[in-house]
Image 1: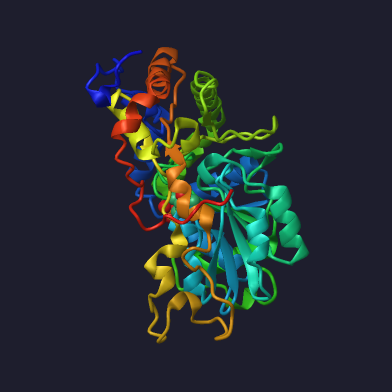
Image 2: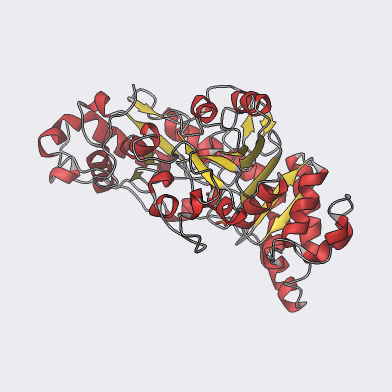
Amino acid sequence: MSKLAILGGEKLNTRSIAENVKWPIVNRAMEEGVLAVLRDGNMSGTDITKQFEKEFAKWQGSKYALAHSSGTASLQAAMFGVGLGHGDELICPSTTYWASGLPAISLGASVVFADIDPVTLCLDPADFEKRITPRTKAVVVVHYSSYPADMDEIMKIARKHNIKVIEDVSHAQGALYKGKMVGTIGDVGAMSLMSGKSFAIGEGGILVTDNQEIYERAVLWGHYERASDITLPGLVEYKGLPCGGYKYRMHQLSSVVGLEQLKKYDSECAIIDKAMKYFWDGLKDLPLGNHIPAEADSFKGGWYACKGLYDPNAFEGLSLKYFIDAIIAEGGQGFAAGCAAPLHACSLFQSMDIYNEGKPANIANRPADAEPINEIGSLPVAETINEYVFAIPWFKHFDRLLIDEQIAVVRKVCENYKDLLASDPKEKVRGKLFQTARKN
Ligand SMILES: *Cc1c(COP(=O)(O)O)cnc(C)c1O
């Protein structure tokens, strides 16, 4: 037994993983593309963006793709696209980035948060169904941390209740759900392409759909310069001005990078997949969950924000925070306790009167006698998940020795966890706010 570094023992010798995890991988074609756009003064044009959309739609397997200035913009356009409006409800998992749901409020709709599944970390289909009301117009499904959500169940429920499905693909470009590209299963996909994400091109987002009406509504919402794309009766008479009052055009320094990224993304994802699976293979005898989909034909595209699942019971109640602190003390890099704070508990959704309506904006357009939503205590998994999930290093290259070093760090802490029990400060990952008992 070797003494753990956090207890004063010798730290395992690990090298910096900084070069390995750097993202995106910038090649000469990207650099030259960006310079050419700059030198042509073509940053605000649409010619390169349209080419990017064409190639992206082909890669994604969608009829239409519409580039946006951000993922947030593409999500709002998707919400307008499916007809979300005043008094409608949008169901959204509580564990996600705020932009999955928040744009609905500016459409006059209410965001109704639903719980996640503690293993997939994606929308729990049963909880989704429980929160449906006659006002539910749409659901946002997030393929969280690149894990393809349970789309068969979700689509079945959504179709039964006539609810539109928006897939938020910001974490999962190129991921497969039972062989199908995520983003093409629901009515519309929307996603961030910012440089931190899997498909990383700078600030930007993209909307994909096979549905002409959703596409044309999204164009009308924030793309005033594309009047000729709008043809449907009910829309065509309004073309020329963006009806949302927004301008959501993508910057061509982003789209030119996107064109080049498309050429190499699949091969980069294959290497990431190999590296990440090698990492988990090296830990497979330890009681940690790997957050890899079980079906052989499902695939974690890009492995953005990759996670591990922690069960304190397998470590005699050792707190996740201390477990991760011990890993970091040993030379672990890219590890962090927790994932996202539960959105439904944020005061913006609870109480903020954003539009001077004299009531909280998120419920301003619900009937006064409607059942309460987003109550603290009502989403037990989202409220406690931070004690059970941790971030892991996101390797971009298959460097066996480097990955072995990070495996060794986790292994050392797991094998010596008993030494930590006496000094565990039992700190919560996100403070004391959410200590409700976890379901099951
Ligand atoms: C990043 C992100 C967004 C928002 O995208 P931006 O490009 O930052 O506007 C939306 N949803 C999820 C799940 C995200 O991670």
